[in-house]
Length: 519
Image (tube, rainbow, N blue to C red; front, side, top):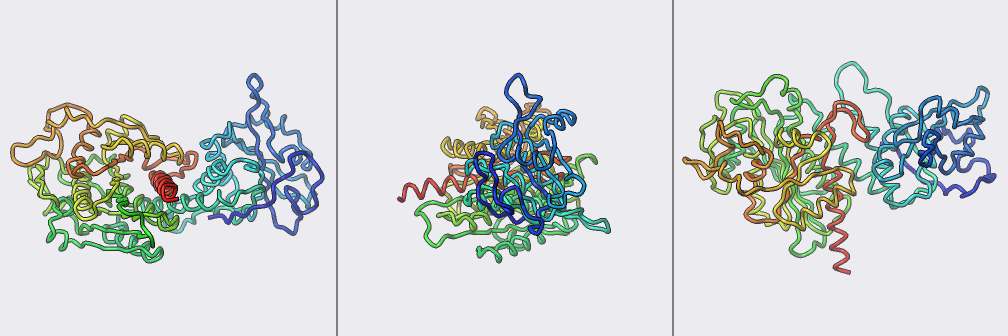
């Protein structure tokens, strides 16, 4: 990622700053891009953008009429728009490019989009100097920097074709508030990790490989780790994981990664459970061809919770945080589990299988039951690409939010608002419970064939609720926003890492509350 440093704020009024300061760098300073902000004009005249701090002085130095240039290019100052101005010929004392960056209404969402746009407009640059967030609040600056780091992400690739130009090596920010940079970097690093893992092809990203990545993260961050291999899973009664992974040459794993602070708040712990289906063929209930390519990303939930527990260690939150990665490949093989099978899960509940393509809820059932029995969390959160129904209902921007605790739901919605990763709460409808009735087991896996009841995202959440035993619990169905088909605002094409920033915002807010109570 780009190295970001702060400079002194610009003067509030145009003046004559000393050479080599602010937006007048000396050639020896190596600045090749200047960036300043513009915003839409007042109502009735929004076709002409308004300058923000430093924008007028930069226009004078480059000898340009920004209003006419913007009008010709159709630039109004909307968030993410940018106008690139080349230095006049023979002006060796000026940086090669001046970028007028639209910041829209300067809301946090607009600033994230502006930051992502600047990152993409400056690939390959050596040093950017900018005044875009000069004089803004800590939260506003953090949002911009998050967007910048996230917009500069590029997925790893293999083969002879190179990855393209990297992010700018350095960026100098006038008026940077130091407390804005660290949380932005932490959130972005977590999202990059989740994206890297989720974008990895399934011939590499097997359950065993994911467990090894978790071990590397744990070692680097001083976290505790425990891994269950297929033999131990079977011996200890993890029937859901064992059944789902039975058809694959790559056996299932359960991974526990724990951050323990030096001084933990009494009775306070958070467990994050991630669905980790490293490839989902659907098993015997085989998926159609067009649904297959994205199924390397069906382990996005496990990538997100691993990134979040690493961030918890970076942030040194004052309570224990554990990530449980429920890892399996849902393959089609001679030993695959079948519709009609009865599977005994970790807590002893028996489940009649109705569709082997609803495998996520089976691995989560084991992990949730383990968390409740062995870890006794004060908050239990699962993250899963669980149902296509969530995407059909909410599209690819919002994740579905379910839960059994009003205070926890409120806290998660607040985290969504502050992180920019939006959620929409859906109800746990108890009247739908009859669809999970079984005549041959404790619980049916899915609604019976021909029920045509709808509400599959709700039914999936109701199934998971059977394994939390009243523990305060949140279920995040991220099937919709797990990927984007093209660069979109702060998301780069491919895996989005959706949920990493959301969980970090939740953990930070919870930590702040506990520290305030202890003060």
